Length: 417
Ligand code: ATP
Ligand code: MG
Image (cartoon, rainbow, N blue to C red; front, side):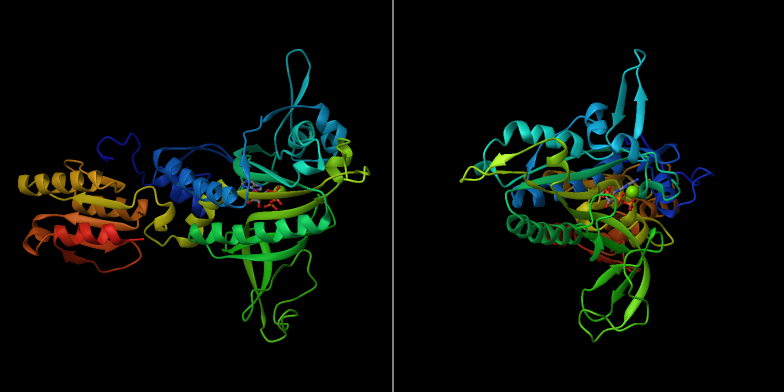
């Protein structure tokens, strides 16, 4: 992509009412556009990051047998009334049509997925099944001060699983937990799995996947020796105490953001929708359900918070909008044509490159924009880099770059993971 044709531009300032670092950086770098508190549009660069995150999530859900669907987000009120959530879920957006019919905007999809599953899963032999979607959610959140980390409109991967026995659920739950840790790792995040009670859904066990960041809204304690981690809200463990799991490490307190969670829903929804199947012996049972959420737009915000520096965003390679930021500096014709040739080579090799080919933009501004946008590798073509033998490359995470020949540069990109 040529930066000269990109329809967005970086900005010096974020909107005055934006208090979160993630949204401030994402807005200034033109990844997102603020519509109002808690509601953002995703622009060219932001869309590419979101798409990559969601693709990682999709791949890992497919590996564990998830089947992707896309459910409606404009919901009839009836199933919400049937489960009682119409009155009890305070974040539910309710809409009245001009004919005074009532609707809900999807804040989660148990009310839609359970009746769908009931229609198609008609024998115990159809179990287990895991159905997921990646889509928009709407919640009437009171506080929307955390940028894309807490939206009133946001995106989530939500998977729902159906099982004949608790044992079968437990097996799948462990598999899903590993898949979750893999997803966060692939996206460049270190997530800790807390054990917590299932909150509004159930009193059964759930895991929350927490990424340490001062911008997080959760308080956790974690062990410095093993993987133990707990949400302070539900745990009686305190900072400074010895870890109850490994009995060796010490517990530390930290702020964290919940990027995903997995719940045992039990038979709550299958009972509410009278979804029964028969065992081979002809005994009726309500399938056990699991719910597995990941906030994909929250992940964008958490990466922006946790991995940025004072110059701007810093994307991990796996979710970066482009893998190389190629900068052509100066008005020298030789430089321009060499940069064009490199851009053509990269494009031909299938490497995703943002090419800052803007004429009349000073080098300092191009560097500042490049740091703000945060593509993991910068490659500069200038008269100086020519004299030194080729292209000056620098990782976004490093202070100093080095000059390599064009051939070496191409080889390096081909072997980069
Ligand atoms: P929180 O405690 O942060 O409100 P939650 O327990 O309400 O989260 P779930 O309903 O289980 O979250 O949703 C699954 C995932 O969706 C969460 O783990 C989080 O990553 C994401 N999520 C929840 N609410 C929001 C929101 N308002 N904006 C962005 N992402 C969200
Ligand atoms: Mg919530």
